[in-house]
Image 1 (cartoon, rainbow over the protein chains, first blue to last red):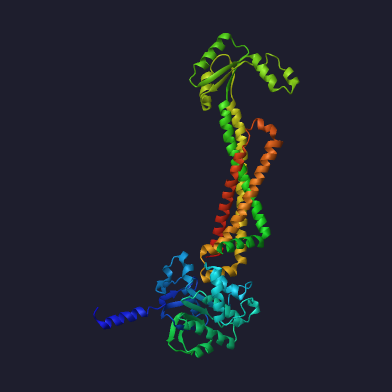
Image 2 (image 1 turned 30 degrees about the horizontal axis):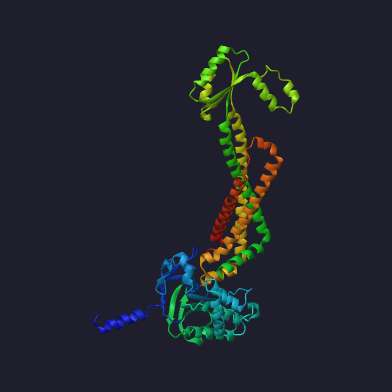
Length: 244
Length: 291
């Protein structure tokens, strides 16, 4: 224990416990001829911004589903925040999901609720009081650049604005991780860039951002870590990558 | 806030699909009425049994040509029998008197019966009415006995009819309950479908399972409770109309149905209605919500 080098090493180890870790994860869906993910191992540190890229059906979205525990891996371990996701008891999964925010290509907003109500809904169904949402929701809507549009319904907002509401909803609970499944898939290039700026700003608050995308333009501009998947295997993992 | 949210969801849910809700409530109430009627009848038969079995007599009718010696022998055989609690002797004249008062509304019938057409008899109360068979077997070999009749056998015929009615009511209750269950299941499916977006978002942001399910389950429970209330009202009204008015003649045979017993049906029906609805809704959600 007197060895300073050993201490330094152990400190480094503690510091770098990944917030997401996949260990030899294989996922074969029932009736599928080949696995969607095949012996995938990857670690993502806290505060990282990571792109998962690859052709359709390569297994990118399966990673999101595994992290949310929507599906269980056939083999291997999925660790989130040093907890084995597969060992979480089913009644504790809702609580576990509160530490993960989610954004999708199709926004998934409630059409009969305003921007404010959509974000507040996410807080109130996990037991936060109206007082909390009155304080927090305007803040987060301001953060995503929707100040002044709180009381618009989704159909009164542009695609980009709707996605901002979705990001606000995913972020309002200050999650550890923000998962984004093709968040720019329905948006034009300029709007996509704005959404990326927003995700970047959220990443700078310390939130780990994991984004699945097809959008080469965005990946090339952001210059962040790129993990490329093909036929269920990682074929590239690059620190400041491009779409390639 | 959470309670208000849940209650609001329940009301909106019941109103959204109001025809289905009404159908659910009606079948539920019919089923529960039948259940209540069946339980009441069961209690009634029980009460009647304990009332009448206390009054039951075995009648030993004597032959018209019975001799004084034979009568004496029968009398002492009865009084020395350990099964017997008490005995009375009825002469022909007494039998005729009783007959006259019993049929006083039809004088022609009474007049057609002469003083000798009714037999004299011993009326015997047994310590335990169940020992009737043994007692009859011991008595029936004696000279001068025309016939031995146990009132219990007559009563049992009446009780058998009640039992049949009770079983019939239970069967109807069961069939209606099945229909009610299917309707509850269907209503919950429709409700879950119309709220699928909300449910998806709730699952996504990590709302607890009970919070997602509670409005649906409560919706079914509220419908079940309304059904139980209606069923109880139907039961009470039919009790008043049928037994206290229309069929009052029957009450000379039937012991009166106590209002207390009818009131007892309210918590029973409410409990059964609420529980059955809740379980059905919950099971349905297991299949259609996959929370």
